[in-house]
Amino acid sequence: MFRDLRLLGLKDPRESGIIHLWDLPSDLTHVDLNKNFKFWLLYSAKNITGTWVELGKKLDLEISKNRKCKQIDCILSGKRFKLSFLIKLVDFLNRNGFCITQEDVENKTILLCVRGNGGKRNTNAILNPKFPFDFNTVEGATIIASLLGDGGISSVSLPHYNNNEVVLKKKVYEAYSGVFGGFVGASKNYYVRQQIYFPKIVGLILTHCFGLVKGRKTETNQRIPIFIMNSNDKIKGAFLQQFYDDEGCMRFKREDSFRVIKLKLANVLKADKNQHSNIKLNNILEYAPSLIKDIKKLLSDLGIESNSLRCVEIYRTKNGTYNTKWNFDISKKPNLKTFLDKVGFYLNRKQNKLIKSIDTYHDYNKTKQKRLIDVFKLCIELQNKDGCVMSRTLANRAKMSQEWSKKIIQQLREENKLILGAERKSFRGAKYFVSEN
Image 1: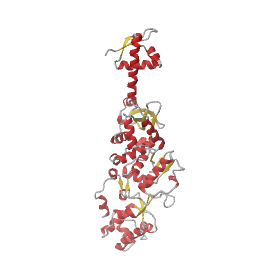
Image 2 (image 1 turned 90 degrees about the horizontal axis):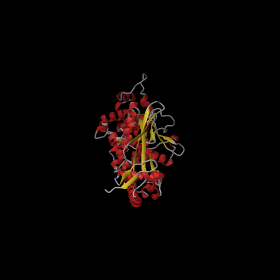
Image 3 (image 1 turned 135 degrees about the horizontal axis):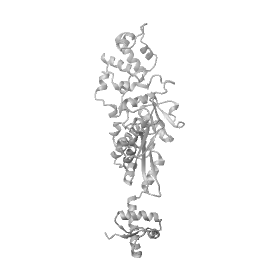
Image 4 (image 1 turned 30 degrees about the horizontal axis):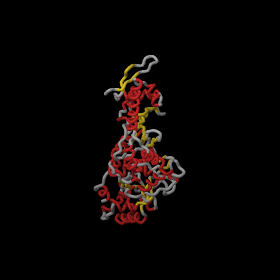
């Protein structure tokens, strides 16, 4: 029977990333079928019971006092109907010798919506839905990442995406269409709208089947769905690309060695105020957003090492609660190169900046060490000439500031290459000697 078929070997969508028609909330989802198939189902069932009223009774539908079944009458007149009715109807037929499969019904479904969706018939609906909805694709990963990035699901279940970049809005729209099917309506015009919206039925599907949470992401502490976490490298890369296009930034200054991909996220801080300083000082990870920890895990799965999570700010919101901001960086040339190869940016300006940062990359630690070696040679020359090393004479010899020379001397002392010979006294500066070790 139809219900039995739904339970045979089918995985939870949260684990599989695949959504079938019968996974949807049956009392909230309204459908329409191919006209010939719909009438064949109805009249086949009526032939078994003899009348529409008797069919209504068999399906436990409400029968009016004047012996009418309003629900069936509405369907016969062309109106959309609840998925729960469709399930009952197919179950009834299969119990009476028919063999109607799940694929039969999905292939003949032409519309999905919620009741009272407003507007014209096709507005706020999914047209010709592409069952099953498979999120184990680049498009599926893009949808989930966009919802956790610059998009979201409103309190009334409307999925939305907000971005100034037309190219990103177009990419997200095409991802929704590629997974779900067709959409119509001005709310999805990514050329004229900064924020685009998708039908409420899409929001219901995502919250019901994947456990995505409505409302502000800083308050819901949303996690990445498990099927994305367990997916292959291609899907993980697609998710990270969309998310970093939304939330990440490429910090690159050609004149120095600062080249990192930075990510910063915030969430509500649920802790006593007297704990705030300790949380920020010690970066207590249990207070970090679950989402940013999941992002680090996906990067690690792809072989991309990232720096430790840091609590960079705790601030009070307008409604009196406290939020905390956390960030981490991806640095070092091998990690940036792996990010480019396995993730990359969809936005050209970010992608070009990443490529330039890799092409002009120089290892800061190696540069620092070479500089210390060169300065140490100068210190040896100064000791041979003056009998000691002083910050003033080192600054003059290296043609740098005295403040710079003091920092360099401190670094050389930490490496036991210079030792303090005489403390600073009055106007006479401190003297240092080259270590014999």
